[in-house]
Length: 496
Image 1: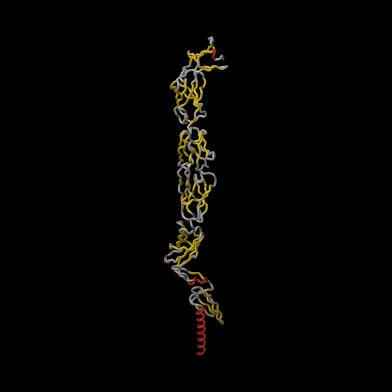
Image 2: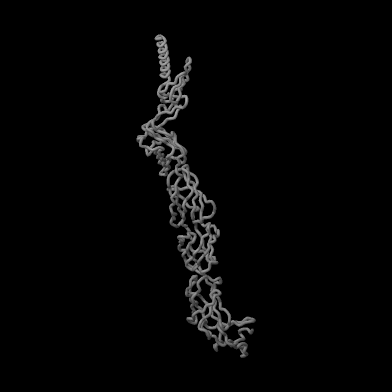
């Protein structure tokens, strides 16, 4: 190429003064707003080097928005030579790799609507139909995404809806981490520029999460304070306290309450949907409610439903003594399980027994009964209640008017209905305290038994039994009878 001092250049018939050359090219500057025109390049001796039409390529200067929304929006680009060429009235541009026909507003301005979503190539170029080349490119960036709020599905609580802006429309461009940069695999069911619907991973916990859209982090993190839920509790604790299984949703790292007291809980595994917690309840009795509370900075606490449960009911196994009597003070001992001195009520035949001692497996009380025993049907009922939880037993205890004398001295059975002893063999008397004697005298042997009649040698006397005449009276009677028989014999002999 000739040096520029040896050249003369005209464009559209107008001589140009601003141009330069290299060894292989000629660089010219055309006036702003020029039309595509004939370019003539000659030497000073009018030798023609180049003579042809030059189609001007659009030149892009700026876009009216420095940051672009992922939603559709209208953009204006300023530049030059948008009306320099004949042909279509629309200017073909490329938004990333997406072809768009822009409206030509003037030689220096075009406008178009951006597509929804996020393009991977982030620049804008104009295309020259005549030259089949691209213009210079303008780079752009998308708005930083924002998170406004989230809600949990009411039935499927592991599904959340996140409201915000500039999320794009592609789930492949989304990622979620916690503050320790650990990834959490949200399954996005729906993605649009202002809303995300996602299924949470089973291990998700209440925490702060960062959402990235095409590597851009949201302005504010997602404060994910999850609503906890507790399912019905089947395993209940004894009154001494102990572990119970609490199953629900989003319970890990929450505070769990039994009544108004916090209880210590440990999760069985890392799952939180559902969560399975082993919780230790303290010593207690009766009914109580279990609930969970989730807390997270910058959010309101969320409280679960309240689940009714209770400690194990008391159970009656045995009671001593087995019988008691009207107006007689009696000390009872009851045996069973899950007794505790918390609102402990003990009734025998609907009369309150004064409790003196309570242990887990037994308790004692004192009662002087006043109810008429003759109006009572045995066996009578025993009622035990621990903080409102009750058990009944009606087959172990009997109630009578009075006891047998000296309790039959442990040598007989008491007929409590009539308060009369039935003595064991070998014992007699109203309280069975006397042994039945066996007596030998001369030729007469007296043996008393519990059957009717008294047998003597050579004679049988019918009449009283051992329960009617005591042994000393029976011996005197035998002597008198013998004496009378001797007198009769002597008198008969003398008369002869």
